[in-house]
Length: 395
Image (cartoon, rainbow, N blue to C red):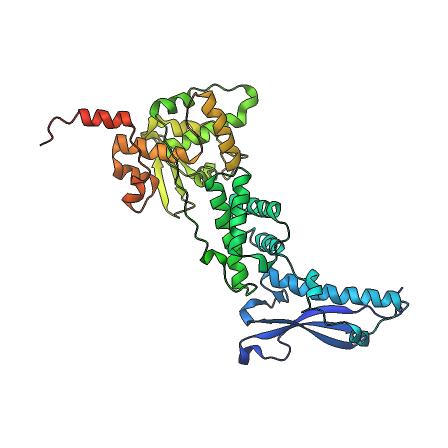
């Protein structure tokens, strides 16, 4: 047992009541022992709105980590002094605590950018969709593989270019490394906002969006997918096929298809009506499934009809898994195209524009601008040639 009382530590904000006058106030660590107190400056100044008064801690997770590091330093010092002093310790012993917080050899108390990324991502988990969280976590994993201990002063234009070249060497496709850069940019901006670094190197490092090589399916290729027969051990593969076809029939994005529940469907006299709110655009739409593609989307919904109203139709399928399985499905259906889930939406747009007109396609895809819809429309050389042959009068 210790011969004296252990020191208790707590975080104190604005002890001198300066926030109202100066706009910011100091965060301190209070050390309490046997009725005596001693205060240590963290060197961190916060605005009132940056402080969580209920939890008695900063709101920003990185700043919380800094404060905890200060407390850990004090606790470690106390433990070491007790060891060498026969378990005795009092607050005056802190006079021997070297002021190392601003010295280079004290780098161990400073988080790396990788740790900062991790803590920021963990703090945002509830506000991110599960798919977005997994994508950001994948970005951090790739960054750790590239360099697990990136210092904030290392975040330069050169680092960004090396990260890109690392991903290319790993075989990442242009859309993948572009997406990872967009995600990384988010957390570098947070470091700037927290005044850990002065500016983002992305101000100079311009990200050009890779051109998509998207070739929609022709109707005969859609029918080839529809005609696939699956064995008993291929239930997940069959579910991916049906998700893809559902997107073809309705024009829904992956984010909307993957989140559908029984509550999204209304039983009308004519058949099922799909009612949903787009995750990307935030627009609400009601789509009568019985009026298009001979009601095939409604048949898929009933095939996976869950017992509970809020249960998902296509549970257990993730975007990365679906895209891998679509490669298998393309081989099974003898489709000579790089099949991925977004092609379903392009296929839907092209087929609806062809059969019902571009304005109908625009409405189904929930595009605000017609030019956006036109970017989804694709005309094959055969269709082009037939259209030209049908023109009888060029005058």
